[in-house]
Image 1 (cartoon, helix red, strand yellow):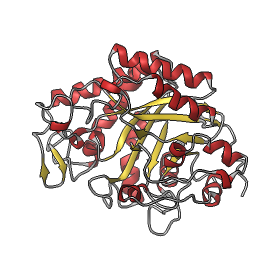
Image 2 (cartoon, rainbow, N blue to C red):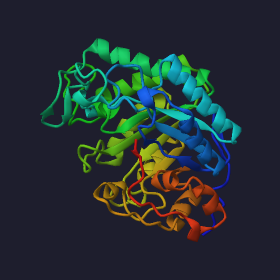
Image 3 (cartoon, rainbow, N blue to C red):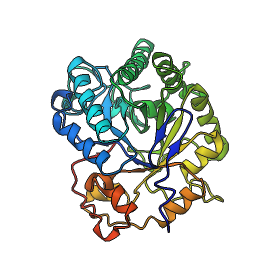
Image 4 (cartoon, helix red, strand yellow):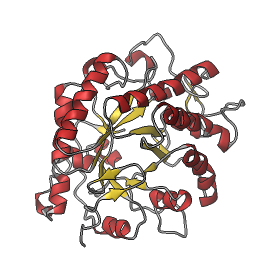
Amino acid sequence: MSSTTLFSPFQSTNLSLSNRIVMAPMTRQFSPNGIPTADVAGYYKRRAEGGTGLIITEGTTVNDKVATMDANIPQFHGEAALAGWKKVVDEVHAAGGKIMPQLWHVGMARVAEKAPFPELPSAGPSGLFKPGKQGAEPMTVAHIEAVIEAFAQAAADAKAIGMDGIEIHGAHGYLIDQFFWEGTNQRTDGWGGSMENRGRFAVEIIKAIRAATAPDFPIVLRYSQWKQQDYTARLAHTPAELEAFLLPLSNAGVDIFHCSQRRYWESEFEGSALNLAGWTKKLTGKPTITVGSVGLNDDFFGAFKGQDSGTRAVDDLLERLDAGEFDLVAVGRALLQDPNWAIKIKENRLDDLQQYSGKALATLS
């Protein structure tokens, strides 16, 4: 199967890329006190040199004291951290790549006693880590509004230091997804209840980011059906429900949807072969990124059990891309293990691909 489409340029209304390969965000905890170092810049530079079209950084936390779960996760606020990220941007651009930060608030996934400011409780719409597991009081409206502003300021700072856009982390059971998910959002005010109200937090973040940046500044939203708290969880059980969830986000200003699955080749709804990215593109008309064990035989949860994930042929992926099911392909562990994965795929050096060992020092954000 030809990889021509994978290495064809991508052009949307506000983003141009040399190919369709995206580096998926992967948390590394290699930024002491939240400050990205020269090693972080070198890490991303090598992926740009290896032919990756767009790099989305590891999750970087917005300016809220309880946004992070570890002091070594990079932050996207403060003079020192932003200076570190400026060096990352410059290194990636010098290598011919493009890069966006993933803006993140971990919400109730934070374990207070292991995080900075352990005296402060973690934050969530209803203080629930998962259905039935209470960990804190519900967020106040003032705190909700402050976090919205923190996302907007981080996006404005990203634009100021030369980032090529931003990605909002709205997946995997972290704060924004905790608002999305009925299981963790039991609010009875305007921030909970209906699907529209549960999506309001993300809608307001998107609108605030748009207002703080520019009409043509690229905004990517990563979302998932599954949660780290429940792999079988679903925000939408039917295409109609998914459309009701997605359209307000699209109308608020999302340019590209990053659709996270455990395995990209699995269909999202019965009766259709389309995966989550395929359905999202069909329902919104917006470009989509597919992600989920690209280049691997197993999903990433096996790695936590010490299992290896061997390389997987990409023929079915290329067929779907050629058919226009989605527009971009995010690569996580395969690219983490091998910074030259893109070049090797392009040159058909499949025997030279490094096999993921299950022991790499990162997890998917």
